[in-house]
Image (cartoon, rainbow, N blue to C red; front, side, top):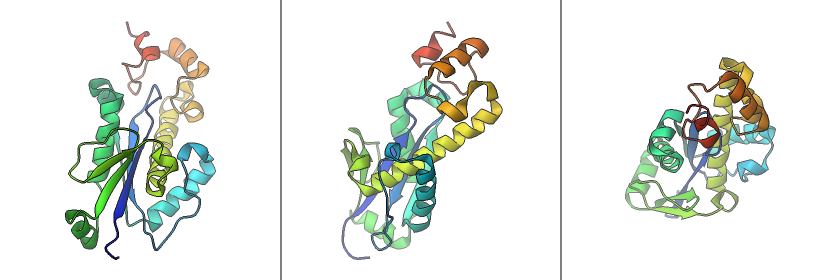
Length: 200
């Protein structure tokens, strides 16, 4: 590894859903081990995301995934929870001694999708639509999305009547209908309007 700048890409998944955690991932790609097909996770099929998730974990210099629960989202709001999940992901990175040295010398910088940076000790830049502009952010968006979907598949087994595997917690007509029939669960975000109206 030479003296080139190393980018840690960061993105989140799950700001809009009514249930489940918000996830974030941080990825430092290896320029010598490129991954073909990286793109904004929303533009990829689930099969492609799952394939690339394995590739990213195998080929990256470092990666980490973190989350904030529905309860934390209700306590501090979704924006702050998203930033906190990003901070947790960045701080969970397992770095090699060489990467640690580079980070301390300022050769590692963080690029985050969006217009706000989490409160971290590394230099950080927010890039609007970064998930379609920066490969490391694209990789992070894929890891975060795959991890969040995995949680919703698990929740679907716990709460089979709500259809989490199908709508992933988003406010679809079916999800709203099931909420009205069966009520609010412990994994729903109580401060989100479609849920909030049911607990008054």
